[in-house]
Amino acid sequence: VRDFYPPSAQYSLMLTVFNILPVSVLDGGRILNCVLGDILGMNNTGKISDALGMAVAESLTLAGLMLLHRELGAAVFCAGIYLLIAEC
Image 1 (cartoon, one colour):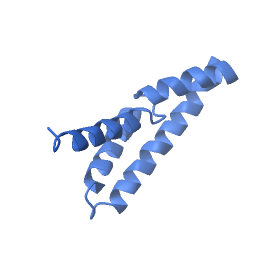
Image 2: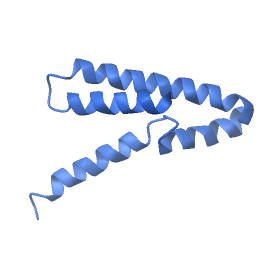
Image 3: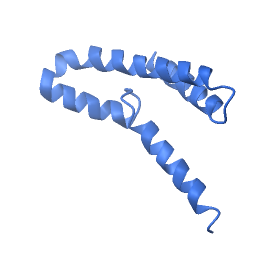
């Protein structure tokens, strides 16, 4: 049990951080839409959150490309590709 706990805690933390990224298909994007909707009004929220989500997805993909030779580089790259596809 001791050997199982630290990796599972790390995976849970990584999934939590991934889920709060401000991309519209994730929970962070929904939170961003709510916050921006209160500040700017719902008419302007979509364009801003879509642009930010695309920028995050592109950044994650580029970071994954640069880290492909490291341990988690392929996972970061695949996550970025997934978010790019989901944002389109």
